[in-house]
Each structure stands twice: as C-alpha cells, then as structure tokens.
Length: 364
Ligand code: ADP
Ligand code: ZN
Image (tube, rainbow, N blue to C red; front, top):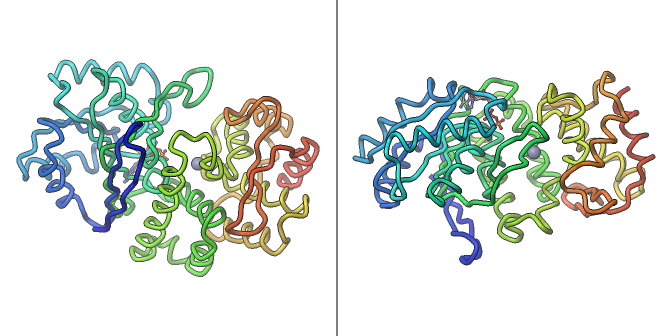
C-alpha cells in the first residue's frame, strides 16, 4: 500500500494521506482502528455499491472492533440533491450519530460529494473518510475537498470545501466497474497527461490496450500518477482560485456539451470532446503543433472515448452554456489552452467565432 501525503495550510484545513493499493481494505481497517478518529462510523453508500461491497466493509471494520453501520441511497446522479441529504441526515440522527462519530463515503463521485457535504454540515461538521470505488472518483473527485449537491437550477450549486480525513483507494473496486464507467474515468487520466506529464501521456499511448483490459499493474501506475498530479494542484491552490483552474482543461466546452445534451452524454465523453476542441483551438491560434493535436485525438479514440460531438446537439446551445459556466469571470471565458503536451496556459480571450467553428468541425 502506497502513501501519498496531501500537505495543506493548517489554518484552512488538515493535511491528510491518500493510500493506494490492490486489496487494501484489511489494512484500511487497521489504519482506521488505530487512528482513534471517532467512536463510531457510518458508511454512506449507494444501492449498487452497497450490494457489491456493503457487507464486506462492515466485516472489515468489525474485525478490528470498529463500531460501524451502513446507510444506503438510490444509485445515480439524480440522487445528488437536498432530499437525499435530508433523508441521510435524519437517518444519522435516528441512529444516534453525534459529534464523536465520523462518516465513510464508499462509492463513486456522487457518494463522495453527498457524504462529504453532509460531513461538512452535520452537527457543525464531523470527519469524513473517502473510499472511492469508480476510476473517476479515485483519480479526481475524492481528492481536493470539493463537496456538494445539484439544484434544479444547475449542478454542484450548493456545497463546501471540506477536506477528507483520509482517502483509501482500493484498485480492486475497479474490477466490477461497468465498462462505460471505467472509460469515463480515463478522460481525467488523459487530461493529467496533457496538462502536466508528457511521460504519463506516452505511457497511456503505449499501453492503451492493457489499460482497456484493466491490467492491474498499469492501473496502479496510472492511478498513482494521476493522484500525485491532482494533489499537487490542490496543495498549491486549495480553494480553486488560481493554478487549480488548469485542471479545468477540456471542461469549459465539456461541461457545455454535457449540459446542452441534457446530461445524456457522460462527463468523460463530454470532456474528451472538450479536450480535442481545446487542442484544435490551440492549434488554430498557432500555439500547438498539429502533431500534438493529432496525438491527443488518437489517444482519446484508442481508449474508446468520444472524439466528436453528436450532430444532434445544437452548436448555439453549447456556446450559450460556455457563457454561463461557473468558472467564467466577468465577460471573458478563461480557456485552458496548450503550447504542447504537458504545457498548458490560461487564455482569457478566445473569440467566440473560433469556438463556434471548432464545435462545428467536431460534429462532422
Ligand atoms: P462517478 O463516480 O462517475 O461520479 P457515480 O458515483 O454515480 O459516478 O458512479 C457511477 C455508477 O457506478 C453508479 O451507478 C454506481 O453505483 C456504480 N459503481 C460505483 N462503484 C462501482 C464499482 N466498484 N463496481 C460497480 N459499480 C460501481
Ligand atoms: Zn472532470
């Protein structure tokens, strides 16, 4: 089991460890038992993950005499709302969970977001341990302390920065992940290669077949590198006001595609198309070579992610959504562009006409 330390400013939050390995739940139990973090734990999980791993995690905790129970909610992004939060909170109260207790989020990004959010407000906040079970949650959403829920008005509109107490990434969870969910997470891994680590990008190119077959050694290597990259950005810019925006590469257009499709396109496929769009815009503005743009497109295809935008989604709809992106400042859209693979920069003045032309090209 590898350990990665996330070093954060003590005044705003606590530094914590990320543990990564294959089959690490037993060791997780020992670490939790030794930590004396809480008298009792509530594992929050969705219906799918509960059926697969609920009993097992309770068994692991019981083995080391850690008192724990489990609360389940219906799987799916549709659960990421205030009703689910209130239902879980009432259950916590009924079961006598108090300030000497802690939560364990067992599941994908939805579970991590809901549980982290509840932990940040329940009885003025209690600790939360993240145990991500999807690739997307393991390499991205469980790290960084962003928690929250969706409102009818938009996604992630209510939430808090609240760092987890620790993060346990067991690669064994990936074995049961449906193919589309696995590929969904690869989009963020490719993003890390593009924005920070050309060696990771090259590894992904060389091993794309092994990755699709979920070779455990390759998975360990790419998850570990992804976590190190994400945590480094979080350490420098915990509250997402500066450098962390680089992590938004491919997401301005990606989020707009997702929203304009009425969320019928997955985050991974929207971001992969968004990354290709950003690479094309970088090329058109003479920052990026056509060779590097081609490599990005090729890798996206090789892992089975979308390299185009469905013609049925209106270009004007996408453009309108980029204008309402939360990350927008005043009137200028901050785009993450590329000089080369591994070298991103932020540009505040991408012409709307260029975005429109690029989206149209990606529909062909
Ligand atoms: P994400 O992690 O992509 O943000 P979710 O939390 O909604 O999104 O997880 C995606 C789907 O995968 C959900 O239906 C969830 O129940 C399911 N799931 C999560 N982890 C696993 C796993 N290890 N094995 C099988 N299914 C899983
Ligand atoms: Zn993303």
